Image (cartoon, rainbow, N blue to C red; front, side):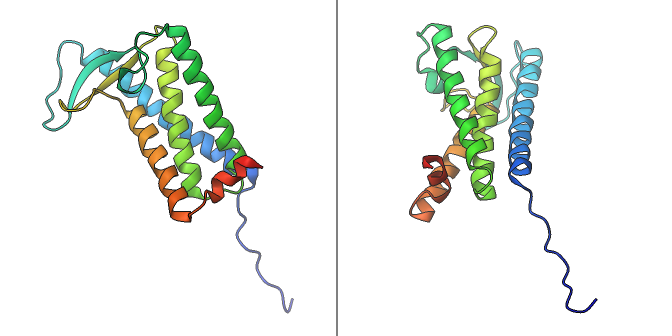
Amino acid sequence: MTGATSPAPARPGALGRRAGLVALAAALTAADLGLKAWAQRALPDAPIDGGPLDLQLAYNSGVAFSFGADAPAWTVIAVTGLITLAVAAALWRTAPKASRLWGGALAAVLGGAAANLIDRTPDGNVTDYLHTGWWPTFNLADTFIICGALLLVAISWRNGKADEGAVLAR
């Protein structure tokens, strides 16, 4: 056949992009929950000195920097649940047209938020295990949330406008 060209590689459709980002968020959630389960078994009476980053078991009834630690557990769970749902909605809505970096950043925030929400639900506390001595004890989910959020800000700032975020306004 003359003049025939090979088709361009298929790009994943909206459902495929969404499924991929949800799978990434789920994998990050599982990684943190697995480490939390390990920390609860291995670290109660035996912290591990790692130099600049120690492994030490702690529990936090509040959110970042123990903010809201005095609030009723159901309030913290409800608010973090609503925020997690909002991030999930943003990921679902922006996934088809957003850059991979934007989607990955939202998946990181969602994975971290979901892990902390799942961990908090039974008793109102989040398990922390990463300790520096100069910073509050935290967990991998917190790292996902902070890194993902910083990346979202950087992408928005770099573009001069939140191109990917503008999809949210539609």
